[in-house]
Image (cartoon, rainbow, N blue to C red):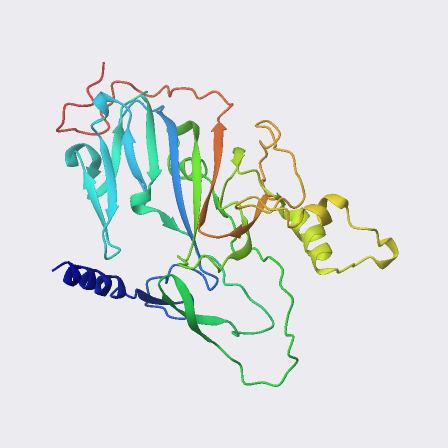
Length: 359
């Protein structure tokens, strides 16, 4: 009996299951599960959390309509006015509204703001409904000659497929450099209201922007991606500060200095100088996620408060799994907002609700 138990145990050890898996690399199959990644496996998920302070300077109520891409919560009356969305497994977003009578009008989402009332509204794009950046593919003179499929067994790469161009051109087709894979989106929160309404005004706003960069899961932890990423969202006229991690360089530095020195290109031969030690010594001095590159000081809140924030930050990452970029924004209306001197007894809207009686 003892011998049978030992034999059974040996058989169980030999019967270790073989775990095999594979994936088609992003950018090569539009319907596969990595379709939101670019062709080097990077996916960008943006979340935003903003508190916006508004005032209605009119002697009558206003209904402010909201872009349903944002969740919102009104900070008044027990915070019971809100809407949030949840994305299901099929990619469809389901919206939940707490109070339809208070937060819809003509089937549009929004909220009422009373005469002369100041209200704070929280706008969010959350992990449940994150905004997916349209990241550019990495391009090279080698065309599409790259790995397109990998097969793993027990976490180790056993084989793969490589896209081959049938050409006898030079066996060395390009030299790598980290390309920027996105262009900042400019958001001007304060521009629309003056054009559509003279009474509802934004007094100030502040918040946090977070960009999560996710690399394709790599079971063997052998395939990393090296690329540049720019500030994902620029809020026009606002201050941008408290970058974490600190950015590698600005866009102008990237275009006018980094790319030329990295590639050994000198557009002014008569002024050729030895590259700074900080660049040559630190180019591949890596943290877990960030290339140090050219060191730049963290700008203060006041230094970054400019109308045009076009020389925006650039990060250069050597990315394994994922990394987060976080920064703060704020804007404050410096001009005094005065209340209207309209006829306060005039009835502009006949309301069937008791929310906006004149006091």
